[in-house]
Image (cartoon, rainbow, N blue to C red):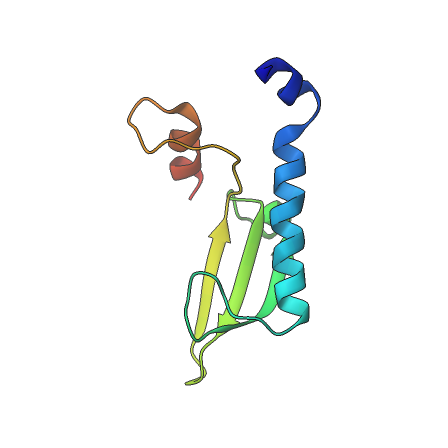
Amino acid sequence: MLKKFIIAGGGGVFEVKVESALVATLLVNGTDPLFPNSYIHELHLETGHEGYLTEDALLISTNPQGEKRKSLWSIKRELAFTEGDIVFADVVRRA
């Protein structure tokens, strides 16, 4: 079953769904999911060309005091916070 998921591009489908939700949030002037009271005003997808190794998304939001907040996103369908998880180690190394 897992092999079928990988061949069918399941991870990429999940990434597109998350990115679509971020775009929709940007379009409605929504709040940043990581920074309460901050509103997204920039969204960059596939940010590898901007020099970030965590290439999936960069959100830039501003709070009511005018302070900018940035968050880099490495979108993964499944991730375990364990010492032996190769995907987690790769995400941390790229951060």
